[in-house]
Amino acid sequence: MSSSPAERKLAIQAPAKINYYLRILGKRPDGYHELDSLMIKLELADDLVLRRRSTAGIEVRCPGKEVPTGPANLVYQAAAAFFAHCRLDPALEITLTKRIPVAAGLGGGSSDAAAVLRGLDQLYGTGLGLEQLQALARPLGADVPFFVQPEPAARARGIGEQLTPVPVPAGVNWIVLVNPGFGVSTKWVYDNFPLTKQSDPANFTGSSAAEALPPHNDLEAVTLAGYPELATIRRQLLAAGASAALMSGSGPTMFAVFAEEPAARACAAGMARQYRKVYVTRPCWGVVKR
Image 1 (spheres, rainbow, N blue to C red):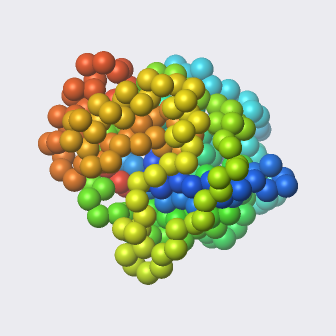
Image 2: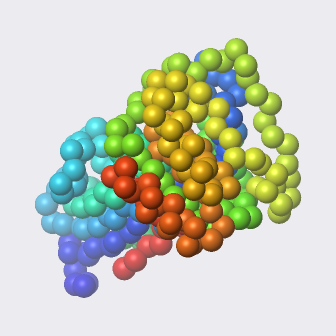
Image 3: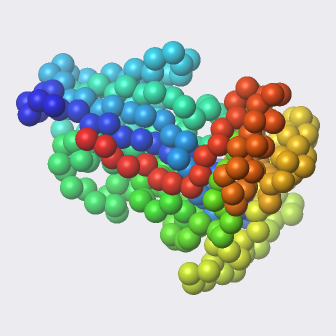
C-alpha cells in the first residue's frame, strides 16, 4: 500500500443484523416509531473499500447490483456527512460489494453507512470518537447508530438511537437466514402497523438482561399478512429443529436460531432446495482491515 495520501485505501466490513426482539411502543409527532429491540450483528457482511484519490468528489461503485450510487445511496450520504463535519474536501472512491440482501430486514444499507463513517474516521485520522460518530449516524437512519458502536449486541430504545450493550442471548450460536427473494418496503410495514395495541417495554437490567428477552417481532403480523409464504418458511424452520424462528426487522427475511453448527447447516441445506437465498452465519461484528 502506498504511503501517498491520494492513494491510501482501507477495507472494512459491514455486518448484517437480526432483531431478536422487537416491540413497537408508539409513534412520535415527527413520524418515527418508538421501539424496544435487541439487535445482534452477524458474520454475514458487505465489503467496502474506501480509497482516497486526487479527483474531487465522492464516487460510489457497486458492481453487479442495481442500487443507487449517487446522493440517494446511504453510503454516499454518510461520506458527505463526514466530509462536511470535518470540513474536508471530498476526494473519495467507495467500492461496495453487496452480500446482504437488499430491503430484507437485515440492515444492510444502515450497516454500509456506519462502516463508511468508521472507516473514514480511520482513513483520515480524524479521531472523532464514538459520540461524534453516532451524532453523524443518527440523521442517516434509526439503525445506523447501532452499527457504529462496536458491540455485537445491544438493546435499542427510542427510535433506535438509545443503545445499551448486552450479551448475545445464550444458545444463539448459529443463525440460518432465509430470504424469499423479494424485498419489502419498511415504510409500508410501519404505515400498516396498528398502533391500537401498544406494548410495554420489557424490563430488565444487568448482565443477564438479554436472556430475559424472548424472541419476538411485533411487525410480523403486518408483513406475514401481506406475504403469507413467510409463515410457511417459519413453519419449515421450526420443523427443522430451530429453537426459534421469526422475521427480522420489517422483513421479509426469516431467521432460525440453533445452538449447534451441524443442525444449522442441515436446516440450511434443506431450505436451499426450495429457496435461493439461504445463509448460515453466527453472531459477530465488522472489523476494520487495512
